[in-house]
Image (cartoon, rainbow, N blue to C red):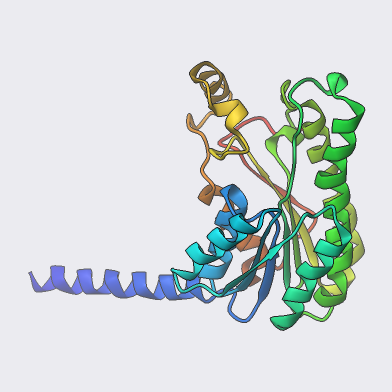
Length: 273
């Protein structure tokens, strides 16, 4: 009996130690996460804040920003919110002004993406193509470029782009979107090479089919859902927390020797170009 109690107490203490280590990994660091009021972006913002970072949450709609910030603050997390359409220069400027107020940016997570049309890549309208690349690719490039003045002052500079399994295995219903996400793999490699001598890491995460509003096209009908599940060896759809922990690793000291890489979190779906 005494031995059992001793082992139980040891387990509890070890769990507390592990929890404390997890929650302090990003203490003192400032992070921006775009499109972070729901889904994967929200989970990333929440995880970084839980690990001690001051996080700037952003989205295009003010009501969504307010809701997300209030929800995170109820946990006692250190977050602020800014309305930001990543394609608008003035909105991006306000985003970086907010991180400057918090002491300067250490971590940028570029998560914003759009997909205004469903269909094959060669069926996409020029308007949809331009919008997809403007938000998914050009804005990611501009965010990274405009973040550098602050990130270069940090001892822990980290940039993470959020791509998709569609970058490797284009989906018929997400043609142009798939191409834009493949472009982020190249942006990651090129930016990582350029910034490596400054000790700034640049990485990418490619989520699989994750249960979010954004992925509803692939999950809303039973038939489509079953078809998607056939392509996932683990036999389940992802959840936002499956992605947030990977981002937390990449932006922490534990990921300091990883740069130029894309980590695929897709339940085993094929991920080769």
